[in-house]
Every structure is written in structure tokens, then in C-alpha cells.
Image 1 (tube, rainbow, N blue to C red):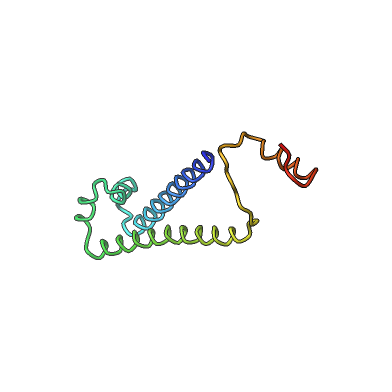
Image 2: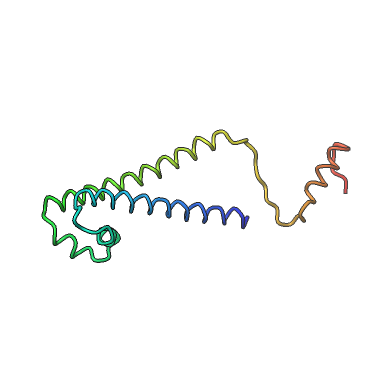
Length: 127
């Protein structure tokens, strides 16, 4: 069970890291095209919220709207990745083998395999 929990946490962490990276790179590239005179470091600080007030007050209203559209588009692209991953999970889950997993903590490891082997030999479980 701990391994399954580790997988869940690792999957979420990986998804957040990839999503954040895609968002930051796409937004930075888009804003760099709109405002080529501003350094990439300043653009990234504005996107992440560090020094964004100065950034947004120094540009014209048309460029500000273009920057905000670029940021919104980048968020939409990350959301698309999340939707695609969710859809793939559903589709791949339909291809999985249907079986019930039963975890019984009272049994010692390997004991259930011994019982299954005894059952196969005689048709019923022997103690």
C-alpha cells in the first residue's frame, strides 16, 4: 500500500513540475515576442509574481492586454495537457484486466499463495 501512495504522490509531483515548466516557457516565449526589449528574467519574474506590479504599470494598455492574452493562452495549453492525461487514463483503464485486488494485512506474505496451491491440489483448502 505504501508503494501505491508513493506512486500517487510522485505522479502529482511530476505533473505539477511538467505543467509549471510548460506554462513558464510558453508564457515567457510569447511575452518575449510582444516585448522584445525586456529581458527574459524580468518577464519570468512578472509571470511568477515577483515584481509584477512594476512590469505591468510600465507597458502600454495594448501590450498589457496582449501579455495577459498570452498568459491566459499558456494556462489553457497546460489545462489541455491535463485533460489529455485524464482522457488517456480513462482509455487505458478500460484496457486493464478486470480483477479484484484484496489486501489482507492479517495474512503473512506468501501464505495466500500456499493456500492457493493446496486448493489446486485437492479442490479445497487444507489446514
